[in-house]
Length: 330
Image 1 (cartoon, rainbow, N blue to C red):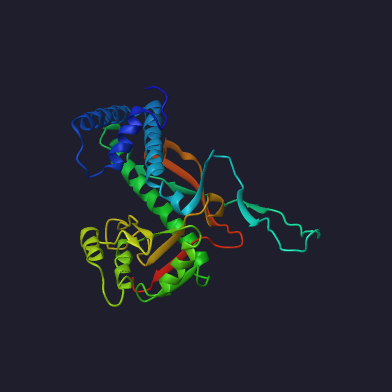
Image 2 (cartoon, rainbow, N blue to C red):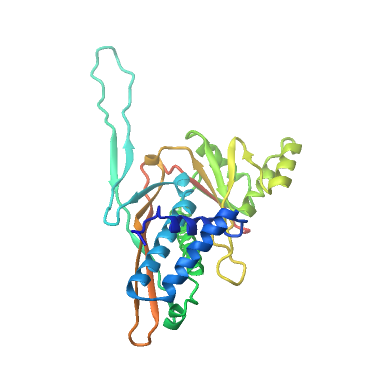
């Protein structure tokens, strides 16, 4: 096999299958996937060090390629930097702007300057360490495709939870117009929205269940339009609320049992349309998925390890350009 990277045919095939999991494949996609699986089985059935290294790389690159696509929405709510593994960039935040003043003709004007501050993020490693019996690998029975899906799905979940927890840790301690809560989506939501809309427009992003409550605030003189009713019946949520587009986040259940969702169902984010520099939330992905593998000489088991390095933090200038509303009933 030639040198692997995220653009290799087998990586693109597995990534496409993971991204379209559950959807009907075309005949060409089925053929490509079957060929890719045959190669994986061939490598696994002859588990020499070179083949195992190739398998390990296939999983790492596929996970990384899928995360790139699934995490793309992060750029809507945060300034995101994708860097090399060893880079630690400084995020630039504006703290002062040049100003003009009224004064007498010929008087000496007051001096002002544009000011910035710079800050970096603490990087953490998101790690997975799957283990299996060596005999399963040697016999070609180990399902590397399923392993790839598991790691990809769990990494996506953990990244989303880290971002949510980072935001909530800061914003739950703030007051309006950056944070408010209520039993349901109450009129205090509008206070947050009005403030964020003044920054150049805003989008409303949240869980499907919380967003369903927005129509309760849309009645004018006790009436709700047929268009809103039809929108809700067709899509489950309305497409626009008071000039702001409404976007539903993907929020599946966690694990294989129970009905706990990945993200808190009660959080609604009001995200203003500001430049990256003025976005409150900062995210860095440092390098691709790092991987290693080996056989344990003690019990013969086969281990792999995958690491994704990431940092998330709230770095604001003089104003937080983001608002969080919490529906305490969810």
